[in-house]
Length: 310
Image 1 (cartoon, rainbow, N blue to C red):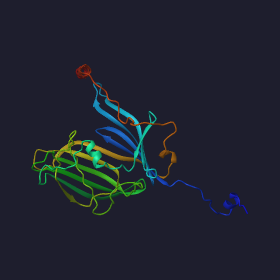
Image 2 (image 1 turned 30 degrees about the horizontal axis):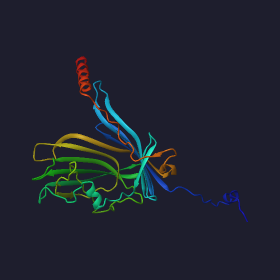
Image 3 (image 1 turned 60 degrees about the vertical axis):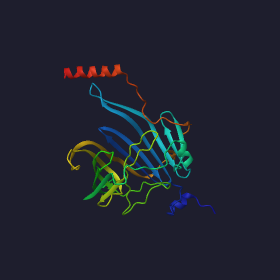
Image 4 (image 1 turned 45 degrees about the horizontal axis):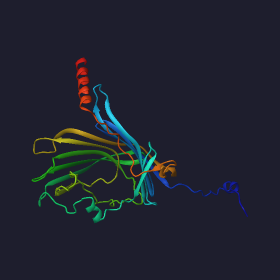
């Protein structure tokens, strides 16, 4: 006997509908040296989408305006179920694809690209000390329905004898929440007590591998492993004194989540839109502008005249 959905609803029996798995949308605003940009991310179990737009410039023109050149709108889609990553240029309606997770290069491929397989260090002794201090202030507040904690992290890089690096000092003032933004094919280390990843940047020379610093890591306090909902990283100029912790602010980077929505997502977000053409390589950055010596000189003349009238 067939029973209509009307009678099932009348008797209070819910109907089973195919529904989308829960998802997550996060919009983050980045501000570097006063130049803002936004990044939108979508997460759903075995897939992820990131939308962003690169920018370059930031120099002040003669008339006081800021010279900013934007690149095309880019979307990156990761599909664990397909083992693929897709990079889309939303302006030219083109896309490229690659395996995901990325496959490591074989020894033959490394040799073909001219990579040196051996690793050399500057010295047998430690040449760089990186000291990280994490302090939970104890402050708490609710952000987007999540309990957020206020944590300040100080990172000091001290070059030792034989080092090729300069002293660096940064302070991260941030609010963190417990939020899982992983997808099924993420290759991440497990989070938890005692799990912390240290990294430092080494300057790479074209066509060769420079000797690496031998680093000593010093950890003070429990490292913060939560999701940063609001962070400001201030880089300090080290003083000429031996105490590198004293310095004046040099630059700052701010990251703030301005939208966080939890709920079902449109499946079309993780598909290649109709009409897009596959290419070998899409354009991702702003167009390069070649500036002549005459144009540079003219900009300087205009700036000088403007200063006179001011």
